[in-house]
Length: 270
Image (tube, rainbow, N blue to C red; front, side, top):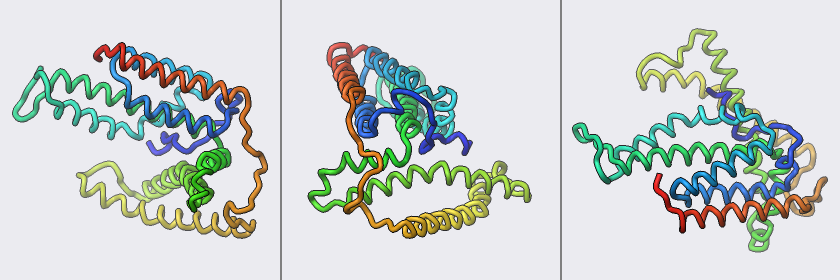
């Protein structure tokens, strides 16, 4: 389960998506997230589906590798769907005691499950096709206007990039600790909820120790290289828009317009 988390990982490949400017991918991800919670009906869903799978195909990242990331949020997805299923008012189709399933609830639960699935797949593309260094440079460049009002843009971009990069590292570390504890007789599966929570204590303590040790090593490495923030620093690979980046902006903007048109003129129910 832990190794199935793909967020924060980078998958090297020779694709157009990998070569895009990180600012384009940040913009596209933001627009895509907005579109997921804007669309209504089958027509807009079809447009979002074609766009998502078209980008996945272009990125050359194996679809099976991306689907692995869904296993980590399966419980959250089920809980969200159940809340929408039982708490959405409307025309009842089944009732038992205080529980009532409505026609609108079924539609809302299905739509929310699809949105969460597409959200994970879509956001994973950005981290799978963008290195941490590129992501840091893209965030810093995109937020550059905020530096004029005293906001430490470089520090924020660096912290976000390090946080994303540490996700797969900590997941791998957790997996190693769990296997070591299980080899010593620890049981993380059986028992009630309280017992399972207690069984996590031998896992959390070494994990926190390892996380702080890695953070300290990173800080020492940055100090040894005379890192002092973003003031006066130059870039080894300065970001520069190319023809494909401008084309990607047009494509993403057209996608958002198409979603809004489907929402306005083709609001076919799910």
